[in-house]
Amino acid sequence: MNLKWPLILVGKIMLLVLCFSCVTTRAQDSPAISAPDCSPENLDPDIRVSTSHDNSQAVRTKLRNVSGHACYLRGELATNFMTVKSGAPITLNPVRSCYNCGPDGKSRWSEPLLLENNHIAHQAFTWANRRISGEIPCVQVNLLELFLNSKMLVLFQTQNPILAVCSQVEVSPFLLGAETDDTNSGASEEDKGAKMLKLTADADAYYVGQRIRLRLEIEEPDGGEPSVERECSLLFERMRSPEGLTRLDQVASAWDSDCKVTSSTILSSKRVITLDVNSGHNNRWGGVGEHTIEFIDIDNSHGNEWLPKVTSNMLYLHIADPSTIKRTWGKLVDGLAADVTIDRNSYELGKDIPLHLAVENFSASVPIYGASPVFNPCEVLEVQVRDSAGQLVSGNHPQPCMGGGPSGAWRYPSGKLIPLEWSLGPLGKLPTHSGVYSVVAIWEPSQGTDYSCEFCQVTDDDIAKSKRYDVRSNVVTFSIQGKHD
Image (cartoon, rainbow, N blue to C red; front, side, top):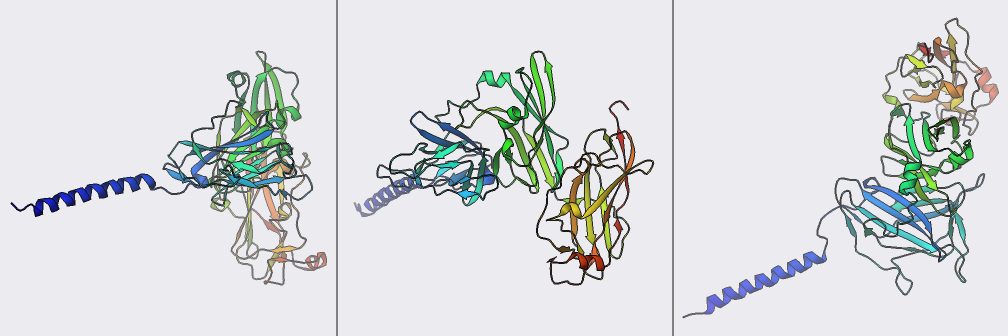
């Protein structure tokens, strides 16, 4: 009997088994799932700042995958430890880091972490908060930036420095699950029941450039008369943009916050306080798309920690491009026109009225100069409000206009829509009585001589000698209804 072919067949089978074993072993060594790297828009981050009794301080990040698919976290989040002082440039502090630091004090490589959808990973940054002999001088930090794949993931800013970095920063690898050392969360069940935050806005959709005010209602045990300092100083605004950037800004640290107590009442031994707060739109955050906002009250029992205590409901604000507004232009004057658009025809007494303004050089035959909509937006237009008798409404505590920049005249290019978002309240032209009113915008640009520059240095004499245009928008009528009308 010839055994050659059966032996060959057995040999080939054994070889296939061995090869299958090799493939299986290699598959276990390499990533089991093909998935992209995580990007900021894939993650919803959270942070904690804690201080230990061993003179160490830590920032602990928690990252939830909200992308709808799995993704990989690799290496460490890049950091910027900065110091911001009023009237001074931002200081970027030279802080060294060691990722997955070994006994020899050197960074070590670690496997990428696969983060499934809706799962959580964490990474910790730890350092000494008191100077150690031979270590770097301590730096006081009140602005921390975290980057993922060169894109900003988190910006955390406090009024006063709460981070004292006195050594190199040791960075842990990404690990699955929430941070295990999370006992100091700052939010006990007693805290949650004792204090409540309710956040509201006048609308859920706004335009780029629009002023957005928020109302925060605080319900807490009666502790005497509220103060702006007490109520506003412990609040943080958490904003997440469509691109994945999450900002945590202390309300009291924002130069434009103008957080103020608008009412305070006592109901069943609890005090209900209402705050009016600037959202920070246009300066701290902006951009088209859906933004989420919530307010956080922190545990301030220790000055060098940041532990959320109570969190408000979440607002979803959609920011739209003002170029999408349907305009009703005023009369065309030598190719120039202006527009006023409002959201509705009737408003409640005391409520601010947004104005969606625009000017455009449609077809002027000469260069058109005027105030810059970027540097001096409040000088572009004059807004007039009149009552039913034709009397001007003015003088109701106008707020100073934020602007300023190089002197000169801006050239309005042909065919470019220039939107401006204002409201009657800050202009000091919000009616204080019920009735019917009208609003018009007046644009008075000048004839220029030079097409070559976008922002031209023009003297007052040049402007005085040049032709001025009187461009008036459409007239919009609206009514003010009193609370008992």
